[in-house]
Image (cartoon, rainbow, N blue to C red; front, side, top):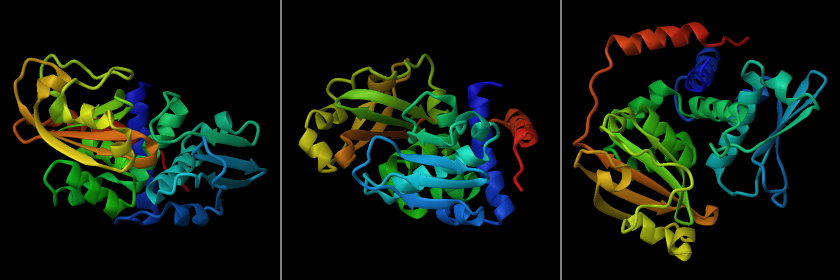
Length: 292
């Protein structure tokens, strides 16, 4: 099974769990879900940083410890949801809890397949597709939409932006960078339709002359959570052969030392997926796990 398909299954598995629990609205409370399975959840002291959380097992009892060194409720809720992913997703307990303790680094920061699956489970749990799409329709594409959705779902800007890029029909690209160097980029399906794109790779520098690059050059502004905006040519960011104007909005993520950039355009659109999307949904439905 391919990695993209496994990640989709992880997201759909979380949504299947919500349906079985009768949860249909936002926000979703991962602490209540854990309590319903008799999983003890505790915050660990702020002095202990470097990890987002841990899943522990003693006999048939489970516990979750989540990081508190980052005072961000959205990050903490995502961390707990990530550990729930390890608990619910097939094969994770057997593979990761051989010693009784698994330490996680949530937030799409690792290429480890189990960690990525748990990240995507957390995204599907806290931002389930149907209510998220309904909420998304209330806003024009851009950073303001990401912020509004993050407030509604009680999730971090970064996790919300990634989920937004996955589900929106608008042309959107989400870029996270540190010190002027790109950590990762997520693009919506509409943005991916641009021909001959130069995919942004981890470790490459931000495009010279962009307002994002200028913000990244000022660590004080990044820590202060400064926001900048401009119009840019999509080719300056993503290459390709199509000249199209995009809105470039960036915000410093405070103590993380990172910059979140949202590129959006109403001039770029994708074609309807048609039967191919329906066939894919049928296939995913057959593979989606069920929970007791």
